[in-house]
Image 1 (cartoon, one colour):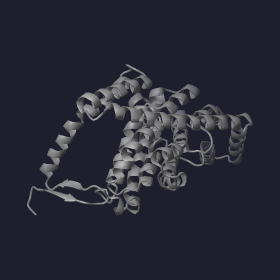
Image 2: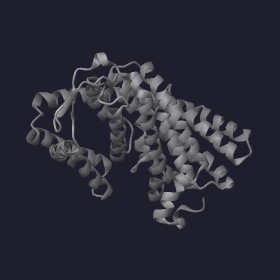
Image 3: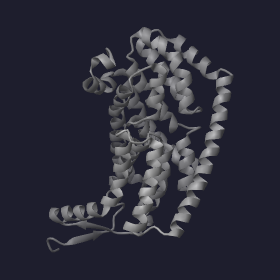
Image 4: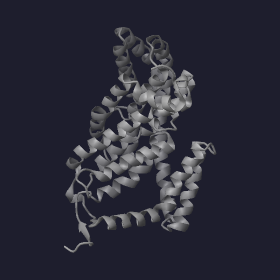
Amino acid sequence: MRTGSCVSHTRWGGASGGGREAVGIVSTLFLGALTGSSIPCISALIPLLVPRLERYGYEKRYTAAVICSCCFLGYLIPPSVPALLYCLIAQQSVSAMFLATVIPGLLIAGGYAILNYVICPRYMNQALVRETLTVSATFSEAVKELGRSTWVALPALGCPALIMVGIYGGICTPNEAGAIAAVYCMVIGYFVYRDLTLEGTRRALHSSILSIGVVLVLIATGTVFGRYLIKIGVAQMVANYAMTLFHTKGMILLSMNVVLLVLGMFIDGTPILVLAVPLFLPLMQDLGVNLVHLGSIVILNIGLGVITPPFAMSLFVGTRLSGCTYMELAKIVLVFFFLVGIPVLLLTTYIPALSCWLPTLVLGPEVVGPW
């Protein structure tokens, strides 16, 4: 084989370790930082990645499940809507709370990437491969290809840059940034790449309206169910019972996690915040738990609740967008939940430095308090 040539390989996704799935994890991490929510990540990435990765041999159930598992990273990477709600309820610094969940969020993303590397090969299917990969034979060719790809992608990369500058610069709200980004993408699609057509726009609008309708029905149903549980006092009874079982700080924190995870199986995150945080605050203050640390634990629990059956909004939306069944996604999502989500939750619960070190470093101990 001649040196300097480009070799074409037909491989299962180009990397048996699931490198292309790791791209989905990183994409969810950045998109979560832009949106601060979970459902937009799923709605944007599943239609984009599932059909493309399937052509390289990745089963669509696995790709969809990975994205569903990662979707709550938007709760942990600032700006975060649950963090804002927690600060409003617990009267904590917004900046401190935003920084407190960064390290747990990165631990989740890193753990997912490692687990993906281990289990991805069992979800590869060579019969699905319909495209070949062109791999540069030399380092210099790889660098040149990277440069060419970056140059072509620059107009598209302006979209996340526009959103981040708008939000973090205080120029616009996240909703306004989303509207501006939509207009920007249409301009780039029509006049720069020229891939977007009127027919393509019509199909995109049609698909978006259908997806939004399904999501709204699910949210409405979940809201009614959650309010019913709150009205009959189920959440209060569960929380009070769990808190009276134990007397040591470690076991009380563990029981709080169990309560929040159980509530997350049936109730949306916002009602849990509004209901559970006022119940836990007095007890946690008596135990000497730092409230920034407590917020990190609560927000991580709420994020894990998004992917926890039976009422897992991410799985319902993922099922609708990917064409997979609920159980196909749930089985894989639960692997990520138990092997990565729960260990990181326990680390965050019992190692306050994971939540408090970064905000203390940036804002000072007078803002965060003792931990």
